[in-house]
Image 1: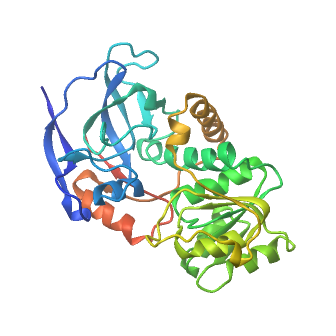
Image 2: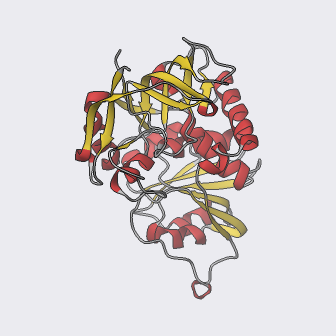
Length: 334
């Protein structure tokens, strides 16, 4: 059996617990594919999993990491159709990190998690596009029901999901209002397509959104921050609107807006990407939506910076520092 350099962690903790180790790769089983990994998209879910704060704990140690990557097919397991050795593909997050992890030179993944990489999309871009756009589409369109003419508030909009949500809103015909904590990323968000940018350290979110919508409020809010700011966010949504929580970057307790706050009648719901990627019909629609956007040039990956696999600890530290606009990608040299 061959070995491949693989990132694992033997205990919960910060980025420093990540170790690059030689690990037996094995052969792909039924329904699985062996990939030579070219690039890896780094996600906050992986930092939460590494720290013991994810929606599922590590089943055992040492544990692997990684949900999103691009690579080349090396071998097919029994019953796998539609892919061939040497084919360039991307991995769409659709599995548990307790079962598979793509932080490695080579990795085995379910064939159901793969999509062919379109012509003209390089390995770095191929590792950066699927998680953001599928998350945005699944939350805003499948669950949130976003339609043309809607106004949507996007918190933490400089993240890769936030930037994809801006493009997704435009693709549907909705108006994206972006929020960011300081002015440092305001110009980048306007350039990315935000109709307006609300600086939360300086402005009242609910008041500004109502000013921008003629007093009505937004139809939908897509929140990757959570924490105390949720109260203001709920106040920015029109009666009958929806607030979707898809992340908790703030790391602070999230209050449930009560009747005593005089809030409008809104729907408050959590959303996780597996709702889309583990539902075959939703995933089929998501793939069609993203592939169409890529093919027409309307969608494009937003990559902030890259690291190499040897620099995985530094990549996680950079992600947690939160200064990036877009995706951090780790490249895997041959």
